[in-house]
Image 1 (cartoon, rainbow, N blue to C red):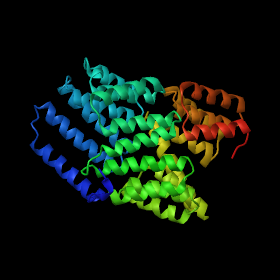
Image 2 (image 1 turned 90 degrees about the vertical axis):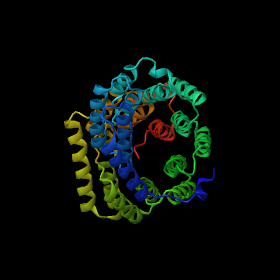
Image 3 (image 1 turned 180 degrees about the vertical axis):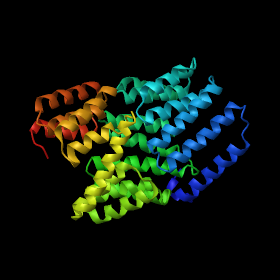
Image 4 (image 1 turned 180 degrees about the horizontal axis):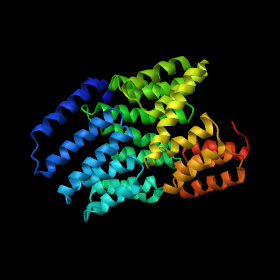
Length: 370
């Protein structure tokens, strides 16, 4: 299927259709039906993700799913949805509990995929690969292939990752243009990580044509503009994104590109707002912004002690290539080279090897602090 030849249905029309469908089902759903409850909550999840997937909305939706689970404890679709929501806010314990709650759930393809997601989140890459492959044999789906692609990237197999993303695209129908655009964005991120800015731009342009006006594509275009030395365009891009999705990580990114344009006051205001939101989340007992706090204090507003402390908290929750890569970088920025090298080696021992980890490892071994 050549998705680029399909007639695109853009973000705004798609969101309106999902919202309308969700409202209709909420009004007519049988309250005694577990399938109806699952359908309504799945539509709510789709709506939340379209509008930015903000953690606070995911947490609220998770609470709504918990209430539905109390009414229909044996309904597997609700448990799978709960597990996915939990992982999105970095709670693998809740995800695992959802999977374990229904006997046999981990032995059917959706359960295998969730189990593999949990394994990848925890840095158990062999278990994740085995789970995705078995699920793909039993029920071939584009998103399982895309998960295998992300796993290949996490373990440093970049050519395999792009090939798997291309295979995932081949399984996407003309009615799934958002899925096609999402995969193109992942391929663009891979190209960007490998330094091929032109290819990244072409892939993002494909995504934009396939699914117009999506803030997600705009955010990645802004990031590409920032890396390509076009900070003024990046500023405009992030401002357009924030008009649709007010997430602190985008406000932080806006502050960084404002700094590059010389607007120090605007940059400081954006960075302060982002930091305040990150800290407020942690104060509520949430953990999904620990990674952002560590990176912020490593590279945006340097504070070596805080960077290492936040990165350690994140790595204590799940020791994966992603968390260990950042912990190593924070230790490096703090001048603790030997500790940083030891953490890098731990990440490689897990089988991690994504381009950012490789780049950080080279920098740490050289001893520089760029």
